[in-house]
Length: 160
Length: 442
Image 1 (cartoon, rainbow over the protein chains, first blue to last red):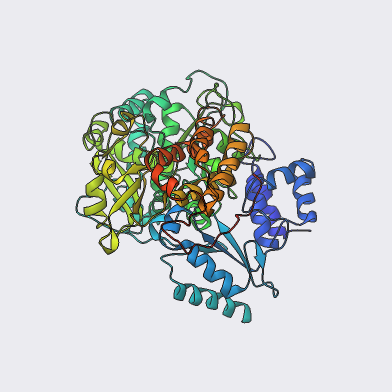
Image 2 (cartoon, rainbow over the protein chains, first blue to last red):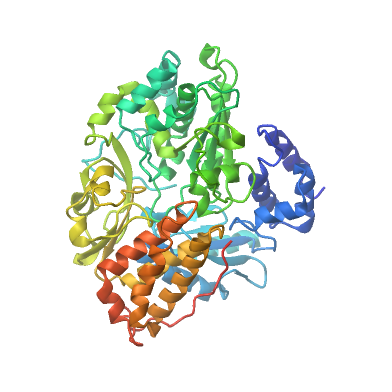
């Protein structure tokens, strides 16, 4: 099985809540990505079969959504918001700092695969700006020092 | 977890359970939880709709459409399954007010969905939460499971003989899916391409069935309206603008945060009193009143405005989503216009040509302009391009890109002129000249 039996069973159960087989497709794609790190060809083929769609139809959906990736990302995907509320409070400087700290640019991954970086649009942290997300975790009211501590905390996790 | 704030002018209705642990069902029950739905079960569907109409509740997502009226458009006699769809795809830049609701009071949203279902005769509701808000999806999943365990959802809810199911759903990153018809496409497992209307979702929505689509905050207001009575809620705001709403203050402001204030609250007071004014004693330059899709106000205009739908409608403008972004006098409006356009260009789905091409040309022109390569004729051309997107697309994304751009050109033309002929940005002369990566639309 491409994805774990547990995840597959969860999908089978949730799909019953929708009148069509493809209803739960977008969540299935993102939960599959969470498990595998990205949407591999095998995963796409599996989900296409499960939803009775063609692989092309599934790829069509994937290409629309900005959180979905068909290539491996870093273990920790650092997403820095530079939209208006964050920009006004230094979001661009936070992005610059992440770039120099990690030595990578927009949509790039570190050589060891630990971190990837992306400049993203509004993540809904406007009143707590500037902000970033590492995978799904929010980090808010940032300063360069806070960013250093956050990155270090994730780096430590990989060492453990 | 989002930090909570407080101010003595706040009227806490939707936010009344914030900070009290109401995501836990037992705590929620102690705080009048699930009382409203039990009351609604004793009311006729017309009574529920009339109570919501009396409250003057208007859509909190940004469009401000009267909620009771929206519900009344759903046909009563139809063999098709009807649906309630909660729009939790909050992604309008500057807007972060649904986040504390989903985090602090998810059961209020569930209650709102059930009550909406009773009002229109739907038996299923979907709660769609944006992909980036995964921790809120998890909170909602638990809240729904707890409500099922108590018998508040499923078969024979509260022993009423009525059935109602609530499903959770998550997106995967797309601003446009916050638009109601694109939201339905996404929930059906497709690309979030808008649908042409009419027919409107109230008649032909999810899987062809009549569908009510309401914002998270709108539905979270409904249980309070049922319990306190529509008229009482209405009385908090000016005529036809019922109640309170959550305003998310951000940008150049001392006390950013999400505050619940009565509609019609003076914007000047919101900035200087509630928000604690502008840092470093700087001057107010501009205000984005309700997310990046709204007409941008100059500081002078902002100080005269009251924050209700009709005060803005009178000017031909929009109150928007409750996302109030404050800009001080160090902000370059050309750069601000560029950042907004970069967003819309990224988010345009490419379905309608005026939006796909318009946002791309505008981004390129504004990039060149901000980098010192602006020509005088570009200034009018920027406005011309924006005007030609307006009203020419299936969904409001094209309008949303055009509106702030037009208002910035109209109100800050001198700043565009200051960038002309290779001059560096007057606000950041040392700004590095960079070519933004040309990223295709989705």
